[in-house]
Image 1 (cartoon, one colour):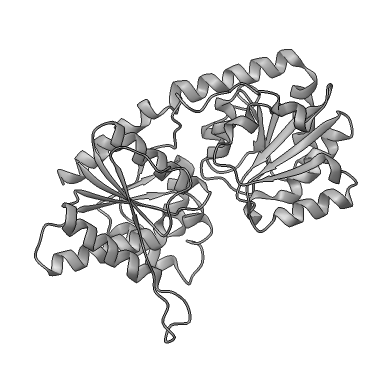
Image 2 (cartoon, rainbow, N blue to C red; image 1 turned 60 degrees about the vertical axis):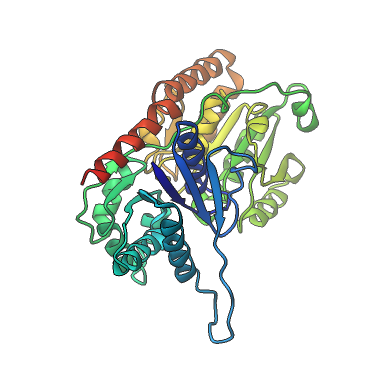
Length: 376
C-alpha cells in the first residue's frame, strides 16, 4: 500500500505513535509518506521506505496568521496525485482530519483516483480541543466524513461519542512500542551523574502542558523525598516547565529537581529510574507510562482515561484518583523502599507491554483496518 501519515512533528504522544507506525509499516513493505510542518523528531534521517514531505506555509500581510490547514490540504492533494496514495492516515483530528477531507474533495473535483481517509483520535484533540465550541462541529464533521476512524483506547472512544456529534463507527487500536528498541539499556555511569549511593531516581516525562499537572508531580515528589533520599528528573519541554522549577524552589527541593529538556531517546533516562510519576488530569492512553513500563520502571499515575486499560492497580503499577496526592506518594515510597515489591511490579509491567502492546501485535491491526476501509 501507499500510505500518507499526517501528524504533528513536536514531542507528544500522537506524533510519536504516528512516526513509529510509519517506520513499522515501511519495514513491512509499504510505501510510506510522512507529511508534517517539520520532520518528526523520532523519524531520523535514514528510514528506508519512508519519505518525509514538509508542508510550507507562506505568510502574507493579508493574513494575521499562517494558513496551515490550507497549505496542508494542498500538499496532501499534490502528494496523492504524484504517488497514487491508497490511504491518507490523519493522526489527531484537527487540523489533520479536516485537511485530509478537504484534500479528498479537491481530488474528487478533478475526477481522478481518490485515496481513503483514516483518522486516529489520540486524546486532547477530543477531550480538550474537541470540547471547545469553537471547534466541536468541525471536528465532528471531519471525523464523520472519514472512511475509517480509530481511537487509542476505549475511554477515548466513549469520550468522543459523549462529547462530539459523531455517528461514525470507531475501532479501538491501542498505542504500541517497538519492543526490540524500547527496553531497559545499560546505564554506563549515567545514574551516578544525578544520584549518589542510597538515593532513588524518580522521573517524569511529558510535554509539560497543564493537563499533566506538574504542580502535583512536584507535590508527590516532595512527600517522597521527605522520607526517602531522591532526585526528580524532568524530561521534556513545555509551558509549565518553569512552573516546576519555581515550585521546587518554593518547597526547598530545587537542587534535587533536574530539568533535562527534550530528549530524542528517553530510554537512557528511564533505564536509570526507580519510579515514574504521571498524575495527569486526563490521559487518553498514557504512552509515556507504557515506555516506562517497558524499561522496568514502576508507574504511579492517576486513575483517569485510558490508564486503567494499561495498568492494573497493585499488579503492574499503581493508580489513584487525581486528588489523592498522599496515596500516590505512599505507593511511590512503597516501591522505592521494598526491593521485592519493586521487582514484582517492574516484571509484571514489562509482561503487560510484551503481551499486549508490542508493534508486532498492533501494527497488523492497522494493516487489516486499512484493508477493510479500502474494501468499503
